[in-house]
Length: 132
Image 1 (cartoon, rainbow, N blue to C red):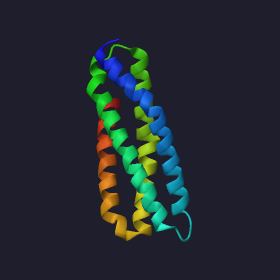
Image 2: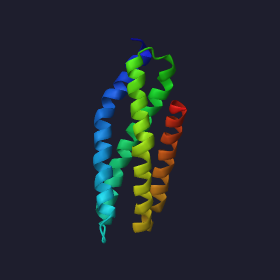
Image 3: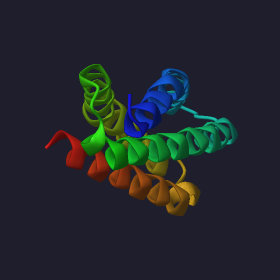
């Protein structure tokens, strides 16, 4: 194992928990925004938690993209590709849709949510470099 394999391996280990948290927060947000009288305070708290998780996702994916070219471990590369595909196909799109709905519910969150969507676009851009 070279240094790149070790760095990517660390990210992959961390991503188990990060993905679980992301899914949990996203599910909670999706459930809240479907309620007729969504509680904006709860939405705001969930968005804060999601921002922390999103920073971890951005950092981890950046690290993977940085080191993948010099990785020698086929299994690590396949696992990284699987995670990237997950974020591209499911995680990012679902989160982006939920965030757009949040803006419809509470326009006062528009600026913050637009920043969140910008970060999702950065993540998507990194994932696209890796996948294609």
